[in-house]
Length: 290
Image 1 (cartoon, rainbow, N blue to C red):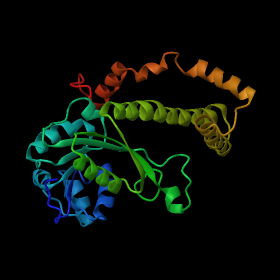
Image 2: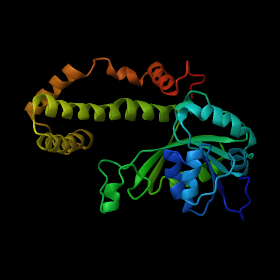
Image 3: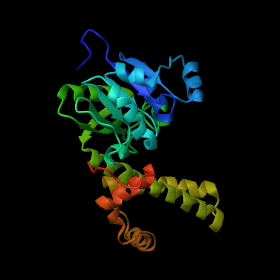
Image 4: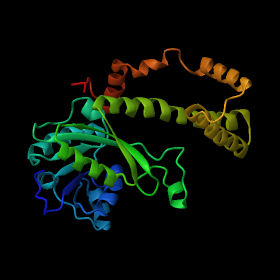
C-alpha cells in the first residue's frame, strides 16, 4: 500500500455525522487506525465537536487516507465520489456502505484506486445472545456479533486485506466477511432483505394493527401471539426445527393464495433489480451493470 509500514493506516470517514457515519466512526475511533472525520453539515459538525472529533475538509481527508469510507446517502454518492476520487492516493481504497450506486455505475473510478462495498448483515435472529448488551444491540456494531457481505473490485490482494481489516473494525464484532460481486450484493440488498424481508416485517405490523383496531383483539394478546409465532415460523422454515401441523399448512396455502402474487419471484430478474435501484437512487437508468 501507499502508506509506509511504520506509519499508522489512515481511514477517512466522509459524512461522519450521519447515521452510518456515526456508527462506523465509533468503532474506528477505538482502533489503531488514524481516523479523519469529514462532515459538510453545520449541525453535523456540531455533533462531531461535542464528541471531541476534529472535522477536516473532505478533499484533504481523502488525499491523506489509505481507505476512504463514503458514509453519505446513496443519492449523493456519485457527486461525492466525483469530487474525492481524483484527489485520492494511488493504491488507496474507496469504500461505500451500500451497493446501489456502484451497481448503477454512478461512482467515479480510477485504475489506481480500488473500489469496495461492505454492508452489514446485522445480528442474526438466531444469534445466541448471552448479555443484556447483546440483546439490546439489534442493529450490530456495538455488542452483538454479526456477519458482513462485501465486494472488492480490484486484483490488489494487499488492498483487499486492508479493506477487510477496516470492515471488521467498523462493523465489530464481526463473525465473518463474505466476498461476492457487486451485482450479487445488490441482489442481497435491496432485493432479498429490503424488497422482501423488510416488506414482510412491515406487513406483519399492518396485520397486527388490523387484528387490534379492526377485529378488536386486545393488543397485549395479539402482540404476544404474533411475536411468539413469528419466532416459531422463522425457526421452522429457515432452520427446519419443527414441522408445521397439517392445519397450519392449509392456512399457509390460503395465505399465499390471498396475499402473494403468483409472479412474485420476478423481483430476482435483472430488469426488476434495475427498476428498484433506479427508484431508490431517483435516476432515470442504470449506467453500468456490474
